[in-house]
Length: 409
Image (tube, rainbow, N blue to C red; front, side):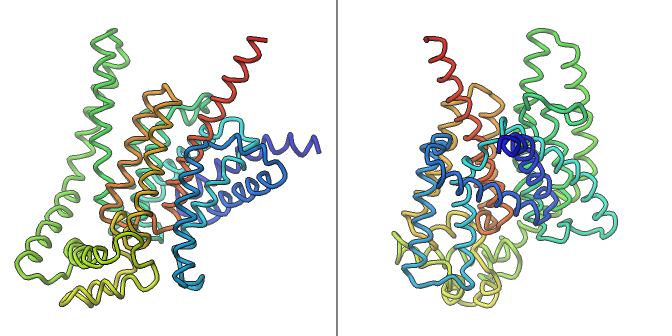
């Protein structure tokens, strides 16, 4: 038994790292490895109930409440299990309730996740340009291009976080985020691009302070190189950005003049308008996931056929409001609020605070045009990152308490 436990100390961190790396290139085995760690957490919860103390308390309670509300409401409506994908997403979120317990033998869980994210970014830097050169179209690695765009941006954010003991070939650095801009751009997912200029400004301010404050020559070189790389990268890519922006403006203008939706942005405007009318009739509990789009399409008038082609409303808040009502939406927002508050209370790391805030900003900015919580890949990354981060902080908090008690004794 002792040998098995010692083996777990070596294998479990590798499982978490491998899960992240595989998810980065959209390989399904990665989701399976995450599920395995969650199952281990369920086992620990049963045979060692005291292991619950390793879970971040506030986050676990709010996330569990949200999952119970979503699943319970769906089952009470009689929506059943067959074809009810909302239950699949809720099951992943429930798995993240038990994930902290499954990380019992992972000494530094956040480091393991960061390492997996860095491997994922490197893999994306190889795979996405290769696919773009071969096809000349939006890159998705055989999956939905928008999903790949989100995964790339999220992995860039996670990879930029500092590890305690980084490997030499994958060192710490803020630049990991900017490497992820290549796959995010090649996927042509506009909703992910906003985080890059935000962090570009933040990071340039940090570097400038070091240059002015201590005259760090390495920082001066980094500032100059960063500016040159930014110009060199953005100039040839500006055509893609302008093309996507012009297309969106044309669709909005056409929809406002004719009321007929035929593109991507204008169809979203049509179905959000119909969804809002329906939500006003069922504000507290919504109408559920199953049959939601048929109901919205019926209210879309001349755009019924266009709206009916979609499987969800492509907006985080609108989808949640119709699925689970105002109560479910408040619980969901509460999960993210608790995450941010806990990070600020338990961590003094400026980079972790910045990254966590922008991570949530990415979820909601991307979620304003896509079903960010209605896809297994994105749900796994979002709740997995929050769960692992808070588990790591909880571990450090308990360790500090133990050292304090030992010192007093």
